[in-house]
Length: 303
Image (tube, rainbow, N blue to C red; front, side, top):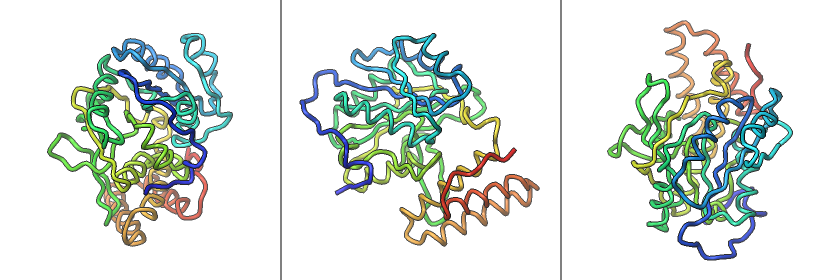
């Protein structure tokens, strides 16, 4: 049985799934209204017939809410009032979706553009197999400088390192939150995203919990999105490093057999590469992030 602190107050399912189950598409915005408006523009071209769009604004201070509402007045915007991180912001939207009877929730990064057939393909794959708890898309980078990601990847728990899957022959132990369709019933049984992860690793944690509860993960080749990676943190690269290592520590404490060894091995491996390349700020940010993973609190911006 899968349990999580976020699952207790979720509404119960009250109706059988229709031919085209209701999907809530949740787009999280933080200081990125231009990307979010472009994302919403692409979502208006989806071929799937029964879906609702929902933007969650994570305490933006750049006028995002007004600009998004002006561009897309038909799309509801939930305002959290402060930055709850990726997990907390998405959970605010997921609770609305489940309360409105959604059969599936599709989490999509605001800096992504969706192929018109992407949602139809995800729902068809999940509906064809009741064991599928979550399904992901093939993710191509808008910059064209990075290879496409096959929906997610795998984790080496003994050292706490992840690798993106590049095709169907690669192992798959997690799905990327960049495009993640989640069955509502799986969320009710396993709980929402764990908010101890402010940013990064929350999708991996949910994937591990789903698999442990008996659900399967799927990647749908005919579902494709284009993504501009790390849009929300590209101006603060060292903050990104801190968030990553904070979340990595918390994930390994939850899932690794020998978490302390995995945490230290991964940090030493990363530190050796940073030392060789003389990336002193990256090295310092990683250790700061790891420390905050042990003692709590999100890392502060390193400018």
